[in-house]
Length: 212
Ligand SMILES: [Zn+2]
Image (cartoon, rainbow, N blue to C red; front, side, top):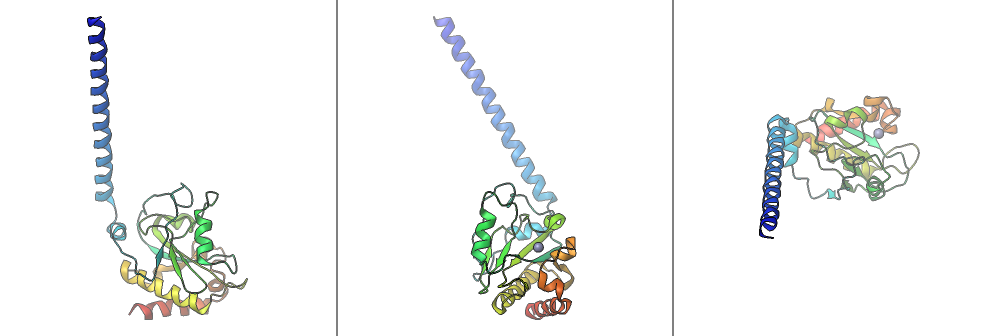
């Protein structure tokens, strides 16, 4: 009896030591990955981790689901991409909730609503699912619109200018780093700024003016 119970306690001890060693190895691997990530991460992305958004932006992040929000970090920051939601009359909250739906595979960092409200859906240093191969190095903004023309309301336009100007200052981006989804894939998005190049140029001028 004694020999068998000592064998059992020896086995328990061995299992305990193996478990502690495995936990230690796992901890070392996790710490190493994080150190590697911080050492190799572009400074622009590191800066985005600690950038506080102004109080005129509502932060309502969507859940990490592996598709809409993958929870992966940007590779770098090269541009801001402007989109339109393509669903006339929907609100910023409607679109944010759509992104958060388990069936959705799309998202944007920000949605600008018809009344100029702005909702942040994805943390700034993470990739959104909006701009195809430029998801890796861009911040995306979706804008709501009242009808099929895709033209923004004055309130949405003004909020888009304010948001883009703030991002340009905070992230040290220039006018040529404000792009349309159209410039990435040729898609008619945002429709208004693709149909009307003058409106697009005026928007960028307005952002640069607001930046000062
Ligand atoms: Zn788009």
